Image (cartoon, rainbow, N blue to C red):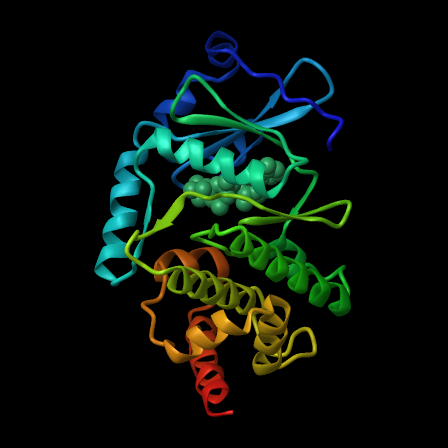
Length: 283
Ligand SMILES: Nc1ncnc2c1ncn2[C@@H]1O[C@H](COP(=O)(O)OP(=O)(O)OP(=O)(O)O)[C@@H](O)[C@H]1O
Ligand SMILES: [Mg+2]
């Protein structure tokens, strides 16, 4: 990917390429216009005139409505994280994190505060990889190890993700992992250990949620959590997490919506994680 260069797109070029109606419609349909994204943002493919395909991630003006409700539910559930409402800060944070963590990926802010550009990664989101029945269990375990190591790498750079779910990382056709979507921040007064534990909690639940039933890849949930923690490898953070297992769950509605196929599995995953942490403490 390093050979592809992203051109800085001027306001004029950008406005020519971006359909203005995208900015007006908050509930954009995925099927239309090669676009993806869930609720609060629109992602549209954009060509630079050459061979490269880039993505433009846009926050429509009505984002404020969904952002407000998202933060309200976070607040009501006692969650200590929030969606970044300030568009300028949002775009800058995403672009900076993408570039710092993935030096081979191009990303640029644009003259619009509510839009930035990122190179399209050729691959699939990890949720789809784990859900696929054409990929072996061994390969799935390997991918799990890779995404968890990717989170550790983020933490080692003194950064955190905020919403590390299997929908927010991409497994490329070359077998590399790219973390994306850095639009959630934790409250500033949390310590680094608290932020890292919350990231680890969220990713663990999200991985468990990718499987409809326990044992799907030949590991029971305890073994799967063991694989996740071993791959993460930082005993200090894991032990901090185990000593503080009752952290308020991060964005419970959001994590359920993005990572789980059934409510029962969601409660089972939370219960097993708590059990695992308690056992970890008594060992
Ligand atoms: N650089 C990229 N390359 C390839 N696919 C991408 C890239 N960035 C985003 N995507 C795809 O678009 C989806 C949504 O992107 P992203 O996670 O950044 O937005 P989002 O904030 O989750 O959207 P929403 O807030 O609307 O739920 C991703 O799950 C992924 O499938
Ligand atoms: Mg996302």
